[in-house]
Length: 477
Ligand SMILES: [Zn+2]
Figure 1 (cartoon, rainbow, N blue to C red):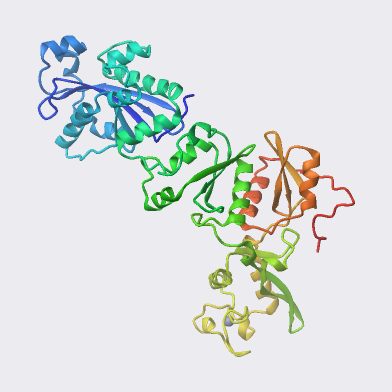
Figure 2: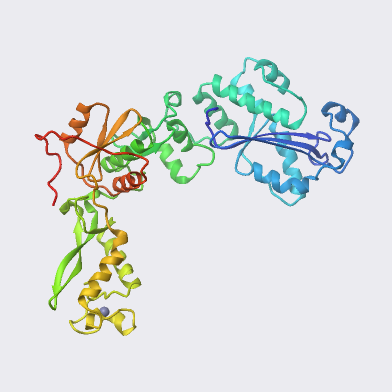
């Protein structure tokens, strides 16, 4: 599988009735599509040019008037061709020719075709300046490319795809990226970041950190393929102002390989919480996290519950069995509870979300939007039971393992306790060392990652044997 360095690409070649795009017409289209995953699809079609093909061109290409007489016209093919070319880097040999022809044909059917274009003549000239010839025949000979049917569209297009694969093997990634960036006019590689770093970046799972001048990272991200992900920040299709402003500030890049995707997700969440980089959106500090807890409350001799806002720092997360929702602020918590209550016709006054004199109907009751707990029309017990039921969708799961567990990924173990990520270890001693460091602050993102992964059964947690001398976690409440 060839390495994918850039955005999705199409390698294109056309056969035509002549050399002038405004007058001459296309007789054959060949397209090799390569997507982000490196999957290759080939497509070609003869095209009825609705005019005759000059004899010398029939000789060159082997495409005769008879062959194209029954072929579809460009108009009939235009939708299909557009679909294949759309949003992909357009690669062709002497690309101005092919791109110009297609633009003209599309114009005739009322389509304004535009693409980012990479010319393999220019690319070859830039990468191999020691050679004077850069024709397709010269490339085929120099790089020993396989060529079954020269001057047929798909064969010529597939030669370009072969050429591209050879470049990826022979040219350092940084040099290739720079050349493509310059030729397409779309490179936004950070001015102050050494391109040589690209050659060291592995296509492995991990976390990468962009730094400016300061010791604190500007941005932290995770990747299944580090190099591809880092490059995607500065590719042709990421010219957003946000990415550009980040690119201008980057001076240094660091990365940490992880045994797999789970490790990358956990480490990313941990490092973002630690450093709070200005270009990461997930900035909220964990200690502002709050939740709703149900407080047993008796009324009129009847047992029931009232919601009470609880803060992260006051709770033993994962051991608490009746907390609902994870909110970044008190405002979010109040807003969500109000919405839930309104949907279920619970009483806002009874829940303490709205002021109403005791025994008097709340505002919503007068609009028939409250079931009447405020005036005794709904009993305290029933209102409480309904509150508990509607909140159950929001319940934060209790840590189901009793104590710390370790989860295998690749050649390492992730050590987890009460929805917290303690770290990744490769030996039993390292596991024990992580346990002794104790649990970090409960974090919403880590909870979500773990709750998702552990319930998917994709991983099998193994309890960690904790020596009696070590008590890393608080007692169960
Ligand atoms: Zn009410």
